Length: 211
Image 1 (cartoon, rainbow, N blue to C red):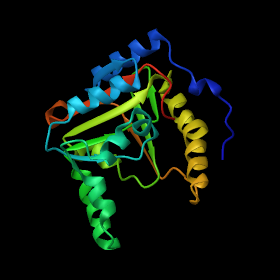
Image 2: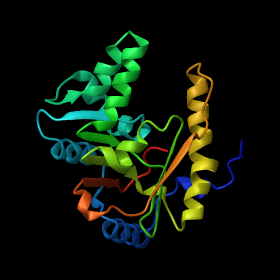
Image 3: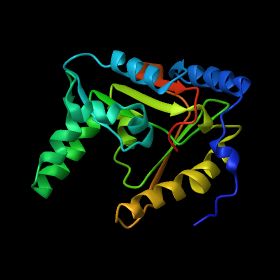
Image 4: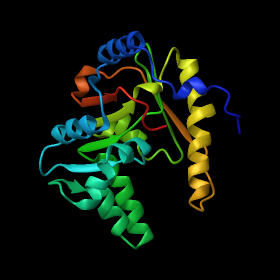
């Protein structure tokens, strides 16, 4: 595994970098909201999901830090929590079927691992379960990310994933008694075709949040 050698991966981007990334993201078909605090991110996220909508979430330290995971667990919402239904299923075959069906969730909420100044977004995944929804299958996708994930280039974004995000995810999983993590699939999101008529939203938090 690559040794961490770029501590700037955890530093906030400059205002100029943030604005450049926002411009690039918008040009690629992403609606961007820049907020100052995790609490504002959580509030904006809730406003984007209507009552009664089916919601699936990707595993995300960012969603945990803004309080979205606690909100779902507390059931103080009016959504259909597809992950809760999936995890409640004890039959392995039925749970696998529910996991596959979750890729069609009306609203899919997660994060990304890196954003370039040109507006590209990079997501790494062990299984790839969230990637179909991010790329195509969900009509509404909402990402939440801290501004420290903004890097100059696509090459830097890929390095951030391998040199920073992966080691921390590997450590987190091993601390939970699991086998660790590795990158199974990578998604590079550059542009959304307008004719797909999906609603893609990124809530960008002007803090260091998530990995």
